[in-house]
Image 1: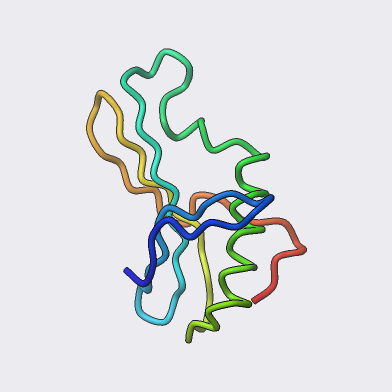
Image 2: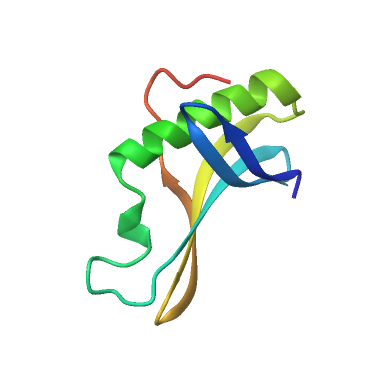
Length: 97
């Protein structure tokens, strides 16, 4: 883990930033007590994904981490336990690293 709770005004916060080999991983952690409204995974909406991509770009520009690629993961915590979803979504085509 390289960083946690990296906050960017107007973009939001990256819960965790980690390295998986040479891949930079931005991890969104979501917890829900119930799956009644779709659970933790569905809480990462398109709007939230755009904000995460924005924050990730700021992170890369500011921290200049050494990496060959990047991905977005979700750690969903719900009544069924913990689920790690690798490469959970792809950011817009505007995201370049």
